[in-house]
Image (tube, rainbow, N blue to C red; front, side):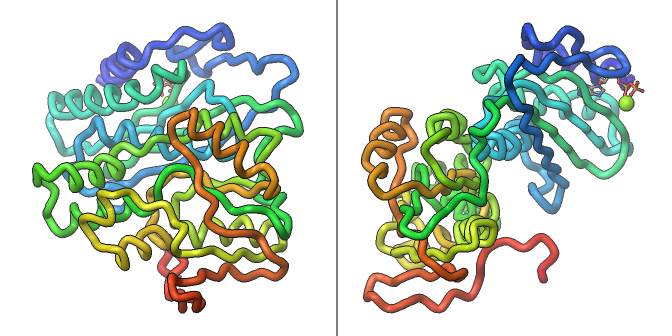
Length: 326
Ligand code: ADP
Ligand code: MG
């Protein structure tokens, strides 16, 4: 049975690559890192009831668990190549239901993997509470990875795309407004269910961004990590935060600002770069389709502060999502 599930996954995710001499099917995969490249690796886990609600469409789970991993590679400026998948599936359900879950999951996973020529090269399949881990591997030339530690006072702070939609989509789900035909609601839900990892932007930022991180836990928390790792502070302008028309339409200006600052699940890139490169980089990311917005600057110190629309500093209650509630 286990092998039939593995075959279903393999069929739906098939991807030839010259750097995969041996993929799924043996005790281990054999992989060839291209000469002169460093390997960037990352892993993320999604647990039912913690990272997605029970009843979430399997295809959306497959997309998202890969998306959050690819977002980490994007934030390093790495080009994705390979993935491993550890699937823990409930034991108390019928084999047909398990197969249907796996089919949907693999379909969503492949919808994101195929355009990237990402190869699923192995994994593990076991029984227990529904939980999925994906590990991804990508390539980056030595010295060109985008680290959290390179921000300097005077740098511009930039973000791709718009902020807050992911967390707003989750709020819509929680409030049970998920079935609405309203296009603004549909936009928020799709941003939450199928985030787009900013892979092309990450590659474009190689050699340009001084520091970079993906926004998974919320802008304040994640920019806070850049500041900590770089030994700097940051000053943001709330008025500059890029928010989608859908977010503002559904939740209003004030809540939209809070979602943009502290909401998680955006998977945009937050990066810093010398002020004189802002226009060139913005034009480049516009051409890639995600765009980029300058939202503030890096300063001496260690704090992340946000100037409100009236010029006064905001009192910030929350820095974003904390997995252990501490
Ligand atoms: P082993 O007992 O040697 O670990 P498994 O039965 O776990 O073998 O796996 C057999 C093959 O199928 C291996 O190549 C493994 O990498 C692959 N595999 C198992 N589960 C998955 C999965 N969920 N996704 C992709 N490949 C998988
Ligand atoms: Mg195994």
